[in-house]
Length: 299
Length: 251
Image 1 (cartoon, rainbow over the protein chains, first blue to last red):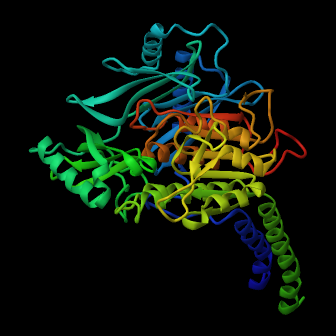
Image 2 (image 1 turned 45 degrees about the horizontal axis):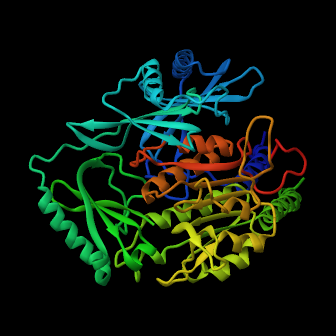
Image 3 (image 1 turned 30 degrees about the horizontal axis):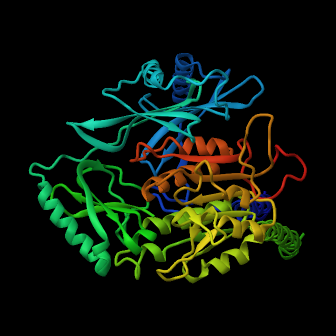
């Protein structure tokens, strides 16, 4: 077979492939690049047959513990660059082939998320508010997780009933965004669960004092608001672990940082004309040196 | 067959296929516009001396997400996101995203309506009321409407109705068409909204139904223990642009 004939046989295949790329969009080759806004957070990662079976086994154990629906599972490993974690997503399917539950496990098998699909705000009587915490704790234990302290219990429209959150504390300092959260339907049945525990940087040996943080925050606010700084005042100062973000940095991160840092979180309230646009603003000052490592606003 | 003749035979079908595909994509996009309105002036110079860099990320993410769903997605900020410009566009929009300052504002008719502030490129920003949008859209069907403002999904919100989305949750065998409204309850921080939105858009991009994407988004690493959002529409809808014309479960 001549070289020309070999090429002629593969060229149509190449042409069709090229058309497919045009039609579907070329895959973004981002390698180890960080998350960029506008793109997807997750991409499929390699998963061996053994790992897939292990993930499915975790899924079955969790389903048994929480009475999750489904008769079979499929699994995919996802590398999530927005949340800086890799997990196995196990989707449970019912006898008709319909997706009915999703669970995510870290690659070491620890539970990250569980969710019953469909809007089903309960078929029984609404649960007594005084029983919500106990119900949530029971589900957390059934899922094999450990929590401590009293949770924050709130009625939640998006959860379908109740949201119960045990915040993560490290030496008494809150880790913002981390912890265990349970979502219950109005009748107390299980809707969803998440466990978030991100890495922390080393705590500074000599963190700056609250007074120094206040002074640094006032200086920052003066520069930030200029003539409108009379319409802002500090409402709270608290120490917390935060994921640095790009709120006030031109070349900041598109996703919250992977490793959390100890910071002074200084919150300002606004008034007057400024409050028509900005209700509250926070600046996060690194507890080591007072540098701004992020912040936030309520508009 | 000579080498030259072989190449010549391949060119017409390849060109035809490329033209056809380009045409079909353009046709889909042209049919289902989506506007992304983002108030940046209110949270940037000259209104603030320092810029808020979370908001542009939300803008980029929303525009890309609507494009992935098959919309002709365009984003507007500054003077392009004015009350007049938004109301001029809204009748044609199948999808809509807005990020701004939102509330339950008192209208000159003496009643309160959910709404949000325009950008307008300055610091004096007029309110766009739900009644303004409703009048312009006149009951026209919407697909995905994401109102990224405070109070947009409070129990009494009047914005879903402006987009002809019934404030009911349809799931399982019950459907109310290819529509879904998402908003926030009460006051919420930008960083939590950004986490929620990226989780939502990413789940949609992964083929999850809009209701599933919402549920996944609700389980993010929010700093606010009281973070809450809500939705109305069809839980199992795919989010793909356009009406259900053949099979309501196939979009």
